[in-house]
Amino acid sequence: MENAVLVVAAAIVDDLATPGALLAARRSRPEHLVGRWEFPGGKVDAGETPEEALHREIREELGVRVELGREIVGPDAGSWIITDRHVMRLWYARVVDGQPAPLVEHDALRWLSSDDLWDVPWLDGDVRIVEDIQPDLAAGSDASASSAPQDETV
Ligand SMILES: Nc1nc2c([nH]c(=O)n2[C@H]2C[C@H](O)[C@@H](COP(=O)(O)OP(=O)(O)OP(=O)(O)O)O2)c(=O)[nH]1
Image (tube, rainbow, N blue to C red; front, side):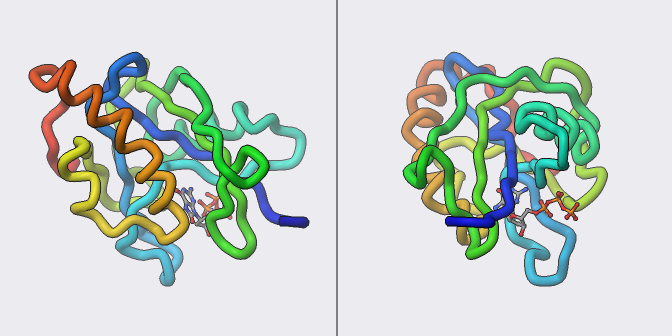
């Protein structure tokens, strides 16, 4: 897609090696996205690398610091076309400092295991990404069922 705006986002998981839970965020704005769930992140500003933009967005939106794991490579020249105007790259990430909170753009956060991944209405563009991630989470749930964070709205 030419002239698409690049969005970067994080699939924040409890453990990078054996992920058992994924942090989903519910949009509180703009109007047409309200109530839908997504991967926290946002647009890359001029002069930023995608990774720099991602660390900035996660700090602004959730108030935490993360370490990045592997990129979740998409089928659209390595990225994911998420709307008719946006293309997204996303990385697995783990919180290394702070407690995630829905500070701006979101009004709820939820840790989802493989079993309840589809309990929330994901943004349309995210559905195939969540499908792609689900097998990784299923494997991690088996390995770390007892240590995964509780599934609760924060
Ligand atoms: N952050 C994010 N945006 C997504 C996802 N899926 C999806 O379709 N989008 C869309 C929603 C928006 O139209 C666009 C990203 O815009 P945004 O509002 O998050 O970007 P931003 O924080 O930089 O916003 P702003 O400064 O322009 O207000 O991509 C997702 O999983 N995460």
